[in-house]
Picture 1 (cartoon, rainbow, N blue to C red):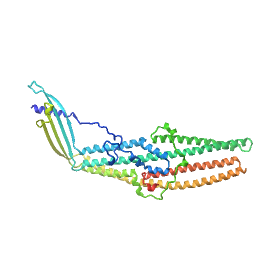
Picture 2: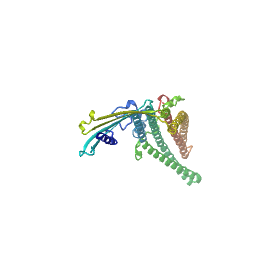
Picture 3: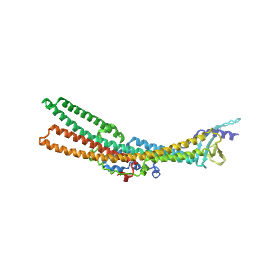
Picture 4: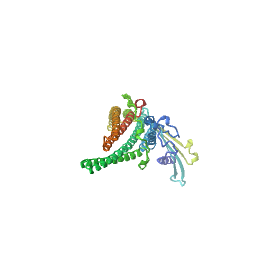
Length: 468
């Protein structure tokens, strides 16, 4: 009787179970394990894969070390990228948690107790260590399929991470080129404003002498004011672009004045534009690869839903070590062991299993349609970027030809001014026209560079042979 009471008390104490926990410094915890080859115990994961995401070699086409350094800085410091990397680690840990369901679980506890039997004056101290082992025999591979489904989500999160790195690198490049172009355009606009000021002063003087009408003088003044307004707007745009650029590279917008950049004239934009690109290039895109993974995951989820109709086989083992003193705790005479198994099958669930299967099938069809849409959208974006690159480059060459003709004409008019056949006012107006065409050239030059970035992004940053 005493043994029975002691056993019951100790089993009740088993509800206060504990699982041993060990705090071990994980030096690689700050970085997710991206690929199997990178999973090394107690070693920091290299950041090289991040630079491979953005294909740094392609950015060398612009021959601008400053731009390349900013992209490298964004890869390390951009907060959106840090969140994308942490998201990958979350999915990785989810895979590990799901993998645990394929393994047995062991729970142990420790329960001391004081026992006083009726009719006895002596109180007995007892110690017990209950232990429970549980395992679901996965003969139908349902838990294995659940782990495979979790792995697909993990692989999809890596595609999201890669897409984030490509997007941020593209944003850094586009923002940098816009800032450099605004530097050039602002410089040209300041020259235009200066010329308009000279025109207004000349016309004001001529108006006082009766050589120019008041209407023409007012028109010149309006042109000057408009030029000054345009200059203010351009400076505002540059400040905003600088603030956005600082955020992209992980710096405070207060540091916008310290952003170093080259001049637009020093940037190479003569990137070869292919006449056509094979449609297979979309297979490099992370969104396409993720859509493919999600179709595979949805198919696995349908398998899991079907296997929910099958019985589950559970094995339960228990052990109890009970003794009056700790020294004789783990001996055979104080040991009580047991093992049992059972099969549980769903008989009536109110139609929930059927509904779940139909839901997973509908989800599979939806994901499949999204895959088809992603396929078409990817091809569209590649073709759009290709057309824009080719036509903008052609437009740029024609505008540059127009600029050269305007420059030649201005040189001819300078000669005429030196000979006294045209006035200084006429020469200044010709010079303003030349500066306006030069502004257009600068803007179209950056359009060509942004088209190259669009093609780089649409092709998933690869391959080299199609974009260089």
